[in-house]
Every structure is written in C-alpha cells, then in structure tokens.
Image 1 (cartoon, helix red, strand yellow):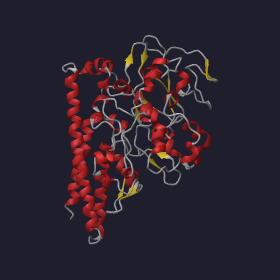
Image 2 (cartoon, one colour; image 1 turned 180 degrees about the horizontal axis):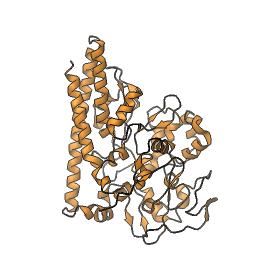
Image 3 (tube, rainbow, N blue to C red; image 1 turned 45 degrees about the horizontal axis):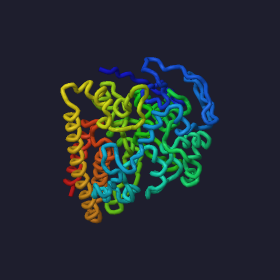
Image 4 (spheres, rainbow, N blue to C red; image 1 turned 180 degrees about the vertical axis):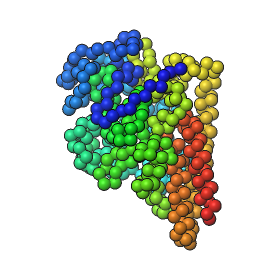
Length: 418
C-alpha cells in the first residue's frame, strides 16, 4: 500500500521535487533522490540547477526542450485530441446536443452558447479563443498558457480586468512545460495564485503530487469587481461547504431568464472530487494513473489508464489482483454508464422544475417563490458538480452518488411546494 504523505503548502512560489511528472526528468533509472542538474542555456534562457528557486522573466517553450527530452516532448504532443480521444471516440462531442436538457439548465449563461468536450491541453489557446462564451477579461487565460503567469506577475491585480483580446494578442504558447516546471527540469512549480492563496488562507492540506494538477483542475469563480480567479474553500473543499460559501456571499454566475433563479456554474472540480476518494486515501495521485512511467522517462500524455499497458500493469492490477484488465475496464465502464444515466435523468428533472417555476412564478407568494428558487439553485449545483467533473463519476463514485442523491432529494422537496 502506498503512503499518504501530505504537505501543507504555503503562499508564494511553491516548489515540490516530483520525479513522476517531471517533463524534463533525467534519462536514468528511477531513484529516491532527484539527480543534480548542471546549469545550461536553452534558447537563450539560462536554466538554473535544481536546488535553486528561479524567478525569471522568460519562458522556455516546449519545442525548445525537444532535443534534450525527446520522449517527454513526443508524448506531450499526443495530447492533441482534435480528431480522436484517448479511447478512440470522436473528439468533437457537443454536450448541448448530447444532453439536451442542459440548454435549459444553462440558459442565461455562457455554457448555453457552447459547451464542447475538451480537445487536449496543447489546444488550450485555440479552445479559449474560438469559444462562443463571453470572455470576461484576461483571467480567462489563467490556465490556458504559461505566458499568463508572467503577465500576472508583471501586471498585478489590474491585469485581471484587462480586455481578453489585448492579452490574447501577446500569447503564443498553449499549456506546456513551464506551467508545471517553469524553467527547471525535475522541479514542480505551483504558480497559479488563486490556488496558492486559497490553501495558504485556509490551511488546506493537499497531497503534493496532486497539487500540480489541482492548480488548474479545480472549481473557481471570478471576482465580479476585479476579475480575479478565486476558489470557494472558506468552509472546505467538499460540495456542501463550497455551496455554503457561494450562498453566503450571494454569488451568482447567471440567472435563468424563464424561472428567474440565480444559478451557479461549477467548473471542473477534479481535485476536490478525487482528493476525497478511496484511491486518494490509499496514496494514489493524478500522475500515478494518468502519466505512465516508461523505461527511462515519464510519459507526458495525460491519458485514461486503460490506454496505457504500463499503468494498468504497474498501478491498477497491483492492487486489483483478482481482476483481469478487461474485467476492470468493464467495471469502470459500468460505473460510468450508471453515472451518466443518472446525470441525464436528473438534468431532465431540473429542466422540468425550471419550467414549473416559470409557469407559476407570477402566482406564487414571495416566500414560496424564493424557497423554490433556492432549492432549484442547490439541486442544480449538486448535479453540476458531477456533470462538470471530467471522470463520469470514476474519480470518486461515492461522492458522485451522494451529490446526485442530494440533487434528487432537493428536486423532490421543490416539487412538493407546487
């Protein structure tokens, strides 16, 4: 059984020695200590040895590392899923077509305009530029390019509200090496200030190997005045605590124009979901299941475990010894199918509830209308926590079931008021 070593992470430039996900890890057998790097220059940028903290104003782009770390770079390029996904299915899924009820659920918000399946980290700039959703400012680039990091450091809080188009014109690099390593091979740099601020302010413990992924794979909102990205962790990182915080500050992402309900839009809460899972409690981390440790290097295609023979044999079957690969895949597919079926069913029930409110809002007394709208808001939040988390329930099946159960109960309570 793996150890469950945790670290309380503090504000500032957080540096974690993390050989599993090192984009530039040394080509040598795995060891318990990170090999010492010599100083070198890549594309005119001096690379500092591992044991020093860098605060530079230049970025070494992914392509510049290609000749030094060819395996890592080659696998990184495989994160382009514009024509296929990791399971071989079409990559151009339109969620608005696949789940018709969400056109009603998100009506009044940006996700009613467009909500497509992600097409890979290396297409992050294309995705954010081409989306039909409104870009509220430069904060929309926060997890789309490493150049955002330097622009934020230079511009401070005033940068967040800078027009998106103005900042986008200055960036060229999609998500790449610098986002996780800055310019130091073998070192993890957590550089998104929203997550570092949150875990410092609320003393949140995060497994250190999850932290590098958690800095972008989390739920957040944008401050209506400054445009700053903020994580809703005042009371905790579970759905109930996050909803409590949102309700306390009366935050509204959008208002449905038919029902008049002020609603929230959950944003990909992968780490909040996984960190409370059975797998996390056993010491597993994001790279264990999504980055294969191949012979002499760590793969940088962030894939489902079922597309990696190495991960299946070395990680999954290391614990699930009673199962074959096919049996394990069948179990996971069955769990995900059940989750998707419930998600679809509950989305339709929420859409119907929205319609009821719209039909009766002019005749309901104020107290009852406010109550039913509040229940509508809560039911949709718990449903969306599962729907917008990109594992179809697999990262934490117990939490997914709990959220959907809660959503169903709240829907029933709301319907009883008519």
